[in-house]
Image 1 (cartoon, one colour):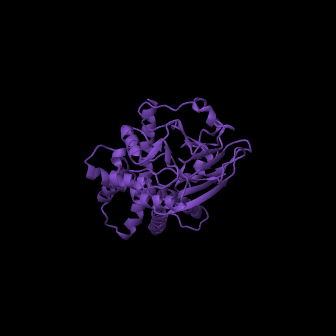
Image 2 (cartoon, rainbow, N blue to C red):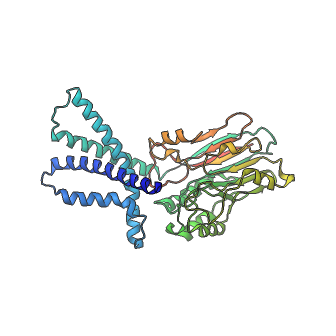
Image 3 (cartoon, rainbow, N blue to C red):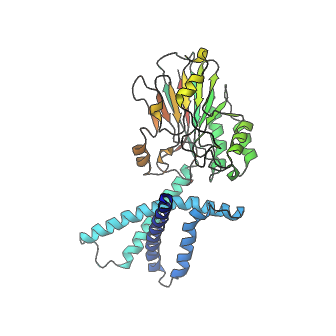
Length: 381
């Protein structure tokens, strides 16, 4: 019953905010086009707004693709229309109180309000789409306290590819090229490789070939993110294996007898990992061969919400998930939710180093505003 009311609330909230946006746009357009048919406008607006929901239904593939594409872009457009109209209305209200804007409000004010909001939204969204096609590189130099690594180790870290999402496969070639340019010793993919459904991949063979072309001295390793599950979980696992990616499911690998790499199972998978559950970290530690127990330890854990699980046994934690909010101002939300939502963090000198990446791809909206898609280079020594 609680779930039903939560869904009902979300639909009412989404419907109400869309009514607000649609009304403001109509008020602006009707100033230019007084004879505009409100019924035609309403139907067109509702179809666009519903694309966000209809894209999740079982529909013919071609229609589903169109709706998913429209819905993904609409999600970002909706966010900025809502915020900017709210700010514009607040300015109008304050202007009316200060007698700077006449009352009753002239229709021309609504026209200029809608025009400014639509233009600003177009600029922000256009920038966001362009920025999401760019792959930046960031680097960190991490010195661990004990058991120094001879000559150091270069790790290339990515996360949140969300393969199957809009433009995800299009950007993959740039990501692979960026990784190979780093000439890493090891590549770590910290979860959310897929976007809930393996069948959403438009070109699995080409995607697999690109992943196979990643070059590193000791291989490519991955852990499970919350979007790497569901009905096609087995297909995802088989795909990674065939793409020369070693998936660590609460398992560890010894890298060149110099490093222990652990990949965690995400604690909150969407629609599950086919019965696979996250183990206690102490259980994983107990499984490590005693002769390897003193090696430096790196943990891939997709969601940075469980940092308290790790003590002095761990040297470095690699995470993603947050996207750093992806769109401004949602970074304020992720920053409030997580102890750290981006970058390098260490609680104290006896605690593990933590690196959170904003991800190499996008979820939902194929846009980045105030954040970047990135490849992380880590020199561990």
